[in-house]
Image (tube, rainbow, N blue to C red; front, top):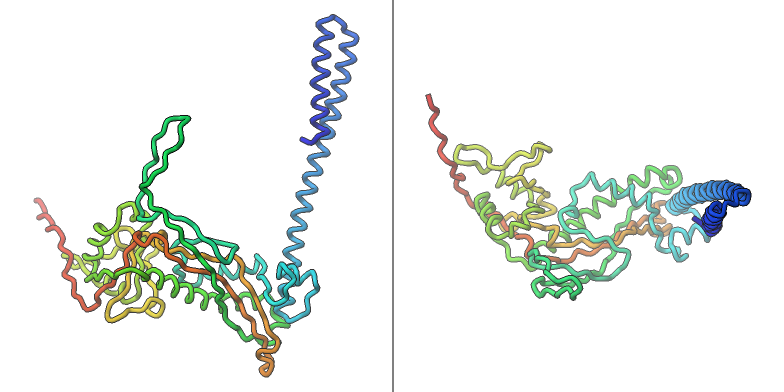
Length: 383
C-alpha cells in the first residue's frame, strides 16, 4: 500500500466516524451526505489499488524481460569471445565485471551447462563437505570431535551460559586457479558455437574432476595414520568401535578397484557373498546399508599391496571450497602456426581439513586371506 492509498484509507475511516456521530445526533440528511462521500472515497480507493497492481505487474514483466535480455547479451558476447571477434566496451565490461579484457567470466547459463556435464564422470566432491565462496581467501568455524553437545539450561531473563564443552576450530582457505589449454580449429570457432560449449565442457570436466579427486584424496589421507585391515571382518569391527555412532548416520565408504575386489570376493560361513547388492542400483554393493563408492586405481592408487579405504563421516572431515565463477581466456597467437586458437578454462578451489576425527583412513591388505565370516548354524527342519 503506497502513501496515496494510506491517505484515502485514513479519510474513509474519519468519514465513518463522522457519519456515526451524525446518526447519534439524528442528523440524517448530513449523515447521508457523508455516506455518499464514503462511497466515492471507496471507489477511488479501488481504482487506485487496481492501478498500483498493474504498475507492479508491469515492473515485474520489465524486470523479467531485462533479465532475459541481459542473459541473451551475455551469451552473444561470450560467443563473440570464443569466435575471436572484437567486443564492444559494454560487452567487455559485461563479461569481465571491471572492463579488464584478459579474464572473461563464463556466463551463468554456460557455467550451469558445463557443470551438468560433470554427471558423466565420477566425482569425489559429493563425498566431502562443500563450501561455495565468491572470495579468494577466508575462514570458517566448525565444532570438532564429531560430538554433539547438549543445549544449556537457563532461566528466562538471565544470560545464556557459555559452554566450554564444544571444541571449536577455525580453518582458513585460499582458493587457487586450475586450468588447461584446449587447441581449437579456427574453422570450428567460426561455424560451431553451441557444439563447442559441450565439447569444451566435456574436455574440461575430465581434467577438472581428476584434479579435484586427487586433491580430495590427498587431504583425506593427510595427518591420518592408516589402519591396516585384513578384510570385511576387520572393517566391520573398526566401524563399530572406532567411529562414534552419531557419525555413522552420514557414513561413506570409499575405496578403489583393488579394495572393492578384495571385499567383493569374501564369503560368509555358508559360502555366500558378504557384500549386499544395492536394491536401487544393481551395479553397486553395500555394507550395512552403506553404498561402497569405488574409484579407479588410477585415481586412488594401491600402494605396496595395500588398497586405500575411507569410512565414516567424510563430509565432516574434509571441505571442498569452490569459487563459484569460472574464467575463460583465449589467445590468437599461441598456436598461430597451426591456424588454431588456444582456449583456457579456469576454475578456482581449495581443499581443506575439517573434523579429521569424523572418519578413518584404512588400508586393505591385499595379501591377507581373511577367514570366512562365521555364521550361526541353520536349524534342522522340523517334521
